[in-house]
Length: 106
Image 1 (cartoon, helix red, strand yellow):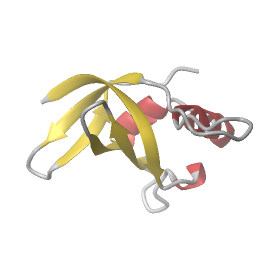
Image 2 (tube, helix red, strand yellow; image 1 turned 120 degrees about the horizontal axis):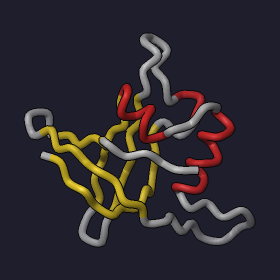
Image 3 (cartoon, one colour; image 1 turned 60 degrees about the vertical axis):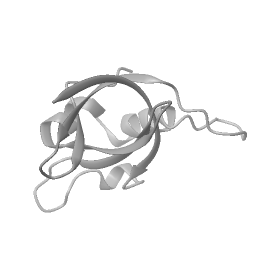
């Protein structure tokens, strides 16, 4: 099942953008903690869908997008992640969700 929703990204694992790709196979593997007004869930960006979602050509671009997505202020203060629209795919057999058909714009 696919769901279109409005969420905020509150955490990312791994936290270093240099570690977003697995050294073994080179595939994108990132776990995002997402929240909406009702709950928090973990959703994964994996392989081609992860590349599509992150839409970055370099680690510098990816780092900038991640800072913006997490709502990290440039000068002190509290984080305030922006609300973004994305598509989530539910995988009930493995009790996971993944980000799909979504692209972060510059």
